[in-house]
Length: 80
Image (tube, rainbow, N blue to C red; front, side, top):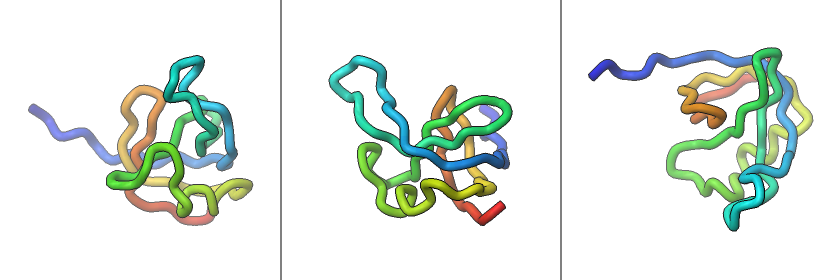
């Protein structure tokens, strides 16, 4: 099986309601890009509250990682 390729996305980080109406719904950190909005996650971090990603809210960033549908698993980021 082919390993997923690393991607780079550029956009603005915001807090939004994620999870729809499920019992997993919560305020989440998202990246708003020209291609759409992606929920940001870091491997090993809580999907419900990640202080490092929360610190990025309001900033324009370039993130590296892998997309899985509407979720983007971040491996690194820098100011854009």
